[in-house]
Length: 399
Ligand SMILES: [Fe+2]
Image (cartoon, rainbow, N blue to C red; front, top):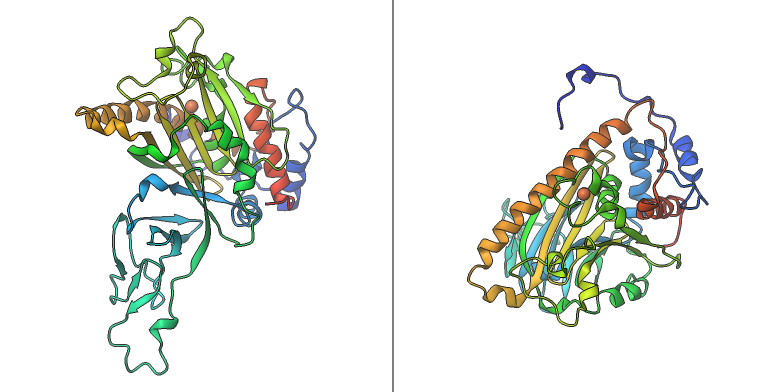
């Protein structure tokens, strides 16, 4: 599907209009109803200048999902992540979860990489060592540096908030608190045992397309009839899916539902072999939910699993996909757990590849000089709502 199309190789890039004109086109869709809605202009998916506008107005000013608390259950547990070129380490220190810059204060090498458990982060370059709060604890051979005070040296800490198990960071440091905008999501999650979730498996991969393409495709099930015609469509028909209209402009998230095909038993909505969460009615089990916490956090829930996802924007045409498959901790007792997770990972990879292929094609098409905003189906309500949210964000909307 992602054939090389050699006859288009070397074609000159889209002659990009000035950023002011792109923004005017983006704002042109303001006030559209779902029935007359269309996509954002293709330049919003291809222009690096527009991406930089999003970076400053949306990603840096608001809250970005970095990870899930289940990644770092014990004191000393950490994972590293780069967000918008900023190397970070997310660590569970004795007092709380901290998001620290992991750039050495000496000569800037990241002091830690990968993930694990540590008491100290010791820079591989010259062995400057920092504790879990970022405080510099040792700096060899610095005794002749006049006035150098290790106690005054601390890795910068980013403002972070943990809401419903997800770790968010605010780069600008002055966003309004996130939790008050998430009350409704807390109600949505009320029958999910958030404190008992563990990671079954994790995957991450690069996406050669704009971050909005990744999140839109997660949120609409219209494409089940095309991209997933043999995998998801047979039990989760795209035509039966629906988005839930977001009435509150302050609400930081949206939800869409994808019911199980009407003639299938509710057990088809469950992953076989995993413990089912308590207090789910049969009707609830039948309806899968997809959540988008703006801008980069996606969650798919069923009655025995949570597909936790973060999309990291990299450039206008690149993003990075991180997925943690969360299950109830009781699942670990099953001797077949590892094998089950391996099977789920394999089937998840098939679905992800189906999305990756069409999204790669979409990004290519978006760069065409002939590409124009496309009309949206009622099944694409989440796409329409994201477009509105982006308009507000780049226009200086509240975070
Ligand atoms: Fe998909």
